Length: 191
Image (cartoon, rainbow, N blue to C red; front, side, top):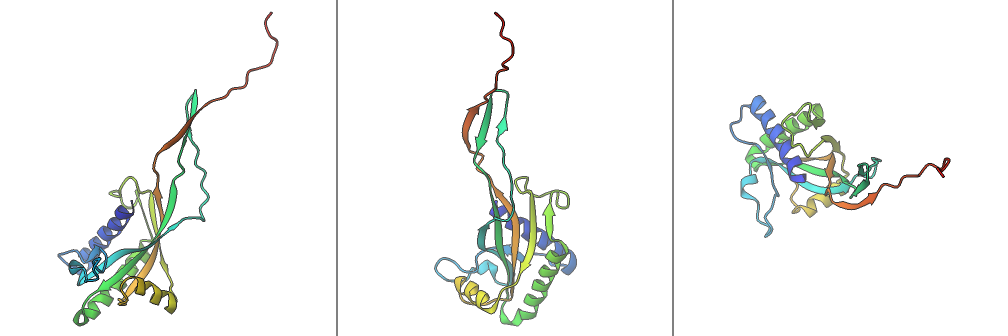
């Protein structure tokens, strides 16, 4: 589901750029900035790169998950986990295209500011396993930004960090099937 969430955001941002900047190819890609060996990812050059910077369990939302039931039993399933994704939107453009980097980054921030939530009402093509994606731009201190970019290769790029709320991972694993216990009426007993 994490992959579908990032791909969904990239698809809609690319559509926005095609309409507003008349670009023929995708400007936004979902990718790492570096290969495992440390070399730059070639196809991410000259692109706005969306990548996962962290995953958090959503502890704020209090949700009650009940098992399903039938006349004879109650099925207890594993409780779904609700996640928040920290998604970096980084402009990976070379020096001669620095102003393009800033233009696309500003346009991405404005797009997500104007479209802070994606659901099945406003984006009918959204994967049915995703219920809703809500984006909030995060503020980072200089120290946090330094630490974050150190983790991702040490080379700062013009970027914005977004918290994407409400990715639900549900294994749909049945943990138990418990029989329904009914209380018998204790009225007059026939003799």
